[in-house]
Amino acid sequence: MNEEKVIENTILFVKEELKDAEGGHDWFHIERVFKNAILISREEDVNVFVVSLAALLHDIADPKFYNGDETIGPKLATEFLEKQKVNKETILHVVNIINHISYKNSFDKNGEKFTSKELEVVQDADRLDAIGAIGIARCFNYGGFKNRALYDPEILPNLNMTKEEYKKSSAPTINHFYEKLLLLKDKMNTNSGKRIATDRHNYMEQFLNQFYNEWNGVK
Image 1: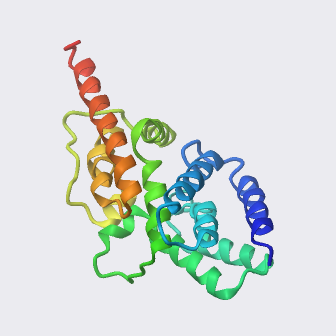
Image 2 (image 1 turned 90 degrees about the vertical axis):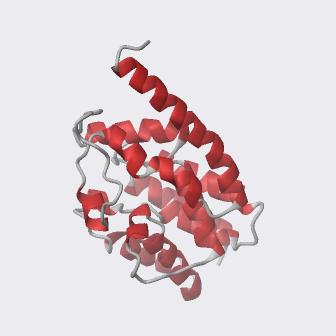
């Protein structure tokens, strides 16, 4: 198995699969997560091949675009990697990362647990793309895609939602900052992730301050 060739084929596969994807979950999202994962890997003792494959395939079929079906992505990834003659141990590791990377799984305190340094790296890389300037852009892009209100002062963020409530939420886009984005800084796994997240978190706080000032006609 030529690992470099497998990575090249995976990139081509993902680009084709996501060619019509929503702008916040398209190939460019994958590319950014892949680059973040490689960057973080430089300071971590991990299998970079596993990290690379998981980063590239983690959103191959995001459940939110498949009526909540969480089985499609792992199935597609497995079938593709088998065709690439990737060994079973690596495939299982990659699929476990795909199954456990999502933020919504943090609501399931009694669910199946899986941990690995590779999961920590890819999870941090994915979460970094959800915060900062790009995170803000992705958040509003998805809100527009779902035709959600920008903000409604009468609809308060739900800070104690269940996994199902999170998946089915149709709250204004600003609420998502409090229900997820502003929480990510303290959920980073790696030192690199924590360091990068701090700057992006501060940027989001500045944005929200400006947003409310403009909303309320302060300045």
